[in-house]
Image 1: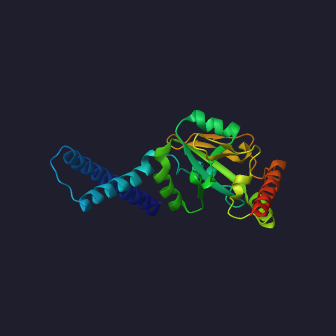
Image 2: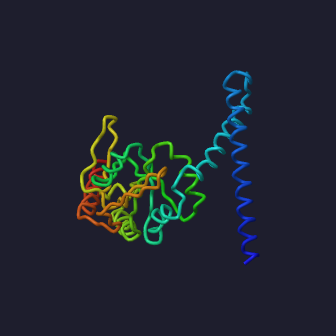
Image 3: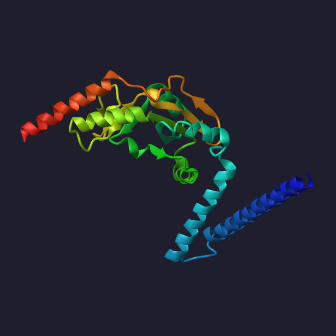
Length: 238
């Protein structure tokens, strides 16, 4: 028992020292920043500016562990527990009303699904890096899951149809794409592929009762058939 007690005490001491070092480092950084921005340090060179920006990145990286709830066991488990049989993606949005709308209406994306949806893996360090690069887009993290079965099935259908340079996710829509004010095509991924969303600051999880990563609609095959006709017409015109 004494050995276990000593190990626990030693661990706590090391953790306290770590927190103290980070606090001191943060205070020093803040003090130097204030001085710099107030004009004490003038005429920065390029390498000095780059060093300053690198310190900001490091500070943001460390602060994620203390201010975010995303890396707690409960939230991590919710994000990652479909990875064995599905592709999982994350998307950030600023307002909860938009997050709720995605849960009920589906996920809208322009041209390519991958412009705003980030694929994730079991690599937690990769998730930390992606989160730190995108968390400023909003507090609400949308979780999107598409089963491997669906991906394989419709990717195979596209291949058999000879349709190339077309994202499989663009087929997974029940309504025709529409053009926005910039004449870009806007697609709508059905709400069944939306697992839920997380407030990464509070750790609150909101689940989608209609979530079904294996959802398949007759519209998906119709989209492929329409693409076949489009490809055929293009070839005939040429």
